[in-house]
Length: 189
Image (cartoon, rainbow, N blue to C red):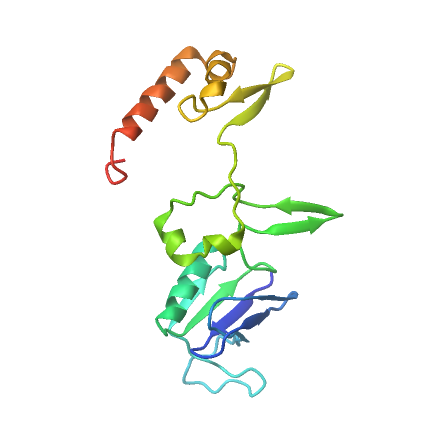
């Protein structure tokens, strides 16, 4: 397992990781990364001159969504930190891999724009987000069946209510849950 160690000092505006497996780069606002010694020497012990020991204020484990969000927040507060990532790239479970000419997306296939913390952190306009149909086509018994929220997709209501996906009781429970959720505040849910 390789470990990429990135330190984000308080100055500069772009950074790239010099991780130990492959060289990858990425950008966060107003930060620069450096390869950090993973020398386990105690701080009072003098490290080798080829791998200088650097102190940092916070260690962030993982460069997935949460780790990158934490790193961005720390950087905005001028708090020095060390970001550790075990894989060969940032993004965690949200990234794209290219295998044998195929593009494979990991993680989220949809993104809910109502997340308040995401709205604070991300520039939605620059992401080129696109709306998706909120239902699904489920392959069952040799054919596809539409499953959709009848309140959001009225034209698909009859198909969704009469298809063989789920029992009548399942559909009633979903309807009751939908009504209960609509009648409560986000906090109460």
